[in-house]
Length: 342
Image 1 (spheres, rainbow, N blue to C red):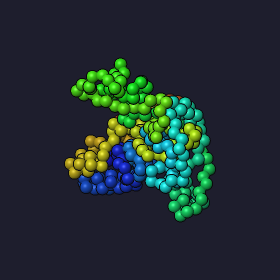
Image 2 (cartoon, rainbow, N blue to C red):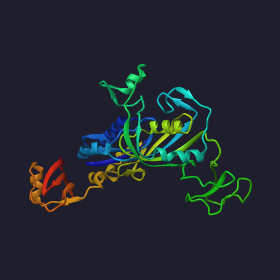
Image 3 (tube, helix red, strand yellow):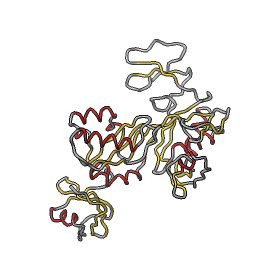
Image 4 (cartoon, helix red, strand yellow):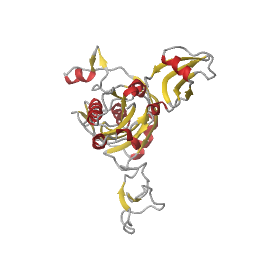
């Protein structure tokens, strides 16, 4: 059991509780004791992709912290809370409401390299203490701004869909497959939806919005709550996050994520192997380096391999598909970055 179990973390569950759930599943399934860790904190009020590293995969969990993430999140306008999410108390209000057109126009200002101030309620340390502990104790918390990259940022005003089809009438007909029709349907007319179709409301581009749902592809260290705060301010109002869902973390997405109920079911059936992703998956952007038995033995002893015909850079060294080490090649010399005991 060396690899990754991807949880679809439910609302209210902390990341460390997700780790504990996998540990319990391993025990109840009779798999024995393995190291378990998570590949990036997800707030209790957030849902979605939480990679859990099992066994030797825990040696790669730190790399997941450096990976890009994709989030869906909803910003409610008019109220800013101290935590920048629905858990906090109101600290600022505004009667201003942006239109969808205004939202679309402002997103470019928050795309690419930006600087943001993390939330006071965050796990960052200030003089050796967690910022959220200081904030909860009533202390004023001032955190330094940080540079992050927003690779893409787009609006998804129709919940459960992509960008709205901006047509007159305020409704569109949506098929079971999720594709809008080629001809817009007016709200006040047209035939009823056929089997497998439904009416779905969306927002017109110049109607005031109480909230908007966005999708962001971000670099490590990005705080979505701060991004939502700054977008609202850029729109001349205030706001906070009411929904946050991580849809991708590094190479892992929702297609391989399982619920806690499914985790328990698989554990009871001694079938956790069915959802355990290979250790290698976390390094899908790193080329493989095939080894001979002698070379693998040398690396496992911490020795340097010389005269290897490979370009400089990192490689996933393996012997007959068995992971040996994450290595660095420089001028034909191969050095171990992280070895695996497999």
